[in-house]
Each structure stands twice: as C-alpha cells, then as structure tokens.
Length: 327
Ligand code: ATP
Image (cartoon, rainbow, N blue to C red; front, side, top):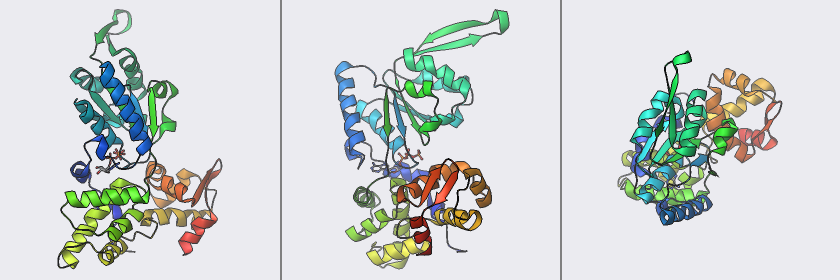
C-alpha cells in the first residue's frame, strides 16, 4: 500500500560488515559446505600450498563474501575484493594480480559478468599463475609473460548457469549455497542482536527468522528495523513478540516472508498473463523492473516455496501460489 516503506529500503551493506562472522567456526548453517572448506583448509596448511580456486554460487545475501573473508582469516592472509562488472578490461585486473601476496585470496563477486576478454586473460592466471601481456599491434606485437605469486581466486555468482564451461572448469572446488533453515536464521538473529546490543526474546528471533526468506542478509535488515521500531515504541527498547510482529507488519512482509515485490510478481502473472506461462522479459517489462533482479532476488525464493514453475514456455503460478495470494 502507498506510504509504507519498502522492505529493501533498509538494505544496508555497511551493516553486513558490522555483523559478518569473521571465523569459519562462527558461520551458522551451511554445515556441509563449511565442513568441506575446513578439510580443504587443513590440507592446505599441511602442504603449505595455496587453497584451490573456489566457486560459490547461490542467491544474494547467503554468505558468499562472508565465507571468502573467513577463509582468508583462517589462513591469516589478505583478501582483496572486486567484482565482474568492475573489471571491464584486463588492465583493471592487473593491480589485483600484482598486489596478491603469496597464498592470499582474490574474491571476485558476480564473476558471471566478467567480459570475455578478461575471462580469457584470467585462464593462465588460474592455471599457472602467469599473465600474458600483449604489447604493440599487428606484426610488432609481442607477448610478455609475467609470473605471479600463487594465490586463490574465490568466485561468487548468483547464476552458475551463465558461467562459460572453461571458466567453471578452472574452479576445482564448486559449492552451491542453499537458503537457510529457520533455526539457523534464528540463531544468526540472536547472535547479531548481541552484537547490536539489543535485547530480543527467542520467539521474536524466530518470528524474524521465519520472515527472512531463508536469507541472513534479510534477517539482519529485519533485526535492525525491529530494533529501531522497539526503540521508538517500547519503553525499554526490548524486541518482544508483539513488537516484532508490528514492525514486520509495517514493512508488509507476510507470514512466509514475501515482500510486496514478490506478491506483485505473482499478481502480474495471474492478472496480466492469465497465470502463465509468461516470459521473464514480458513480466519484467510489465512490472517495470530489471529481469536480472527478478531472476536473482525474486524467483529463487518463490520457486523454493513452490509458488511458481519455470517451464520452457515461461513462468507459471502454481495452485499454492494462487492460494497464498488469495489467503
Ligand atoms: P552478495 O552476493 O549479495 O554480496 P553474499 O552471499 O556475499 O551476498 P554476505 O555479504 O556474505 O552475502 O552476507 C550478508 C550478511 O549476512 C553478512 O554480513 C552476515 O552478517 C550475514 N551472514 C551471511 N551468512 C551468514 C552465516 N552463515 N552466519 C552468520 N551470518 C551470516
């Protein structure tokens, strides 16, 4: 409805930094992924080699950056951070490569958006820690090889399907991050409430967890909103269950954690496209929203809820999706 703030108006990357668990042991959930990373870390330490290149994929806000930083901390090495769209040409990557100290980590977010020229430039880096720089043009062109210190690339992507096979294959270790269970999110909320010096009871932590769409970044944002709400509405600033419910209701986040944008997506398919199948581009156009946002941030959770299906002919709203809309 008009007037109410959108839930993502409270998105705040600075908050990510404040609440990030710094050690692998403090990472809640994703147990299998963390256990495998621990084995790799132990082997790396014994062999004193750099960690193998790692590809992390999954929807935004599930902890890809957190894991890369935690790995660097465990190895006591530095972690440089960049992203696919920031690396427009090979020369943009060069400073990171020459700065990379032995066994350190270079985190490349949105690696599926690396331009082709940068991708080709990165192959010899990943294989042999070597860069091939072409100087001059035509007959006068010469290639200079530069040797780099061995280091690790941790790539993150919300779309592993968009990665080319040669790039994907150069990551010896690939992990898919799944949405978090409610209990894990509730634990993250409790720990982060302590970091934010806010009192919250267990049922409120669970209430926030339940409405966080399986995503720790959402839990953090909702926790911060609930804290602000409690500061204003409750004498001691305590996040009680009643306060949490009121705070979440004001953001128009429903019992399953769907936000206005998610419901609008479902309504668009139902009302404009007769329930589907409807193509992503057409839905995005009607909603006046970039297709990438829908594909990365809206559809994965709706698919997980079983509210939509992706078919070769387009997206379809399922019977349970319809039910949720009318409920
Ligand atoms: P994006 O790809 O959008 O940058 P991301 O997957 O890299 O997202 P992070 O920035 O690592 O996500 O995580 C967002 C925030 O969620 C972190 O600051 C941290 O507070 C919290 N978080 C993520 N994963 C965990 C976890 N397993 N345990 C505790 N907190 C977590």
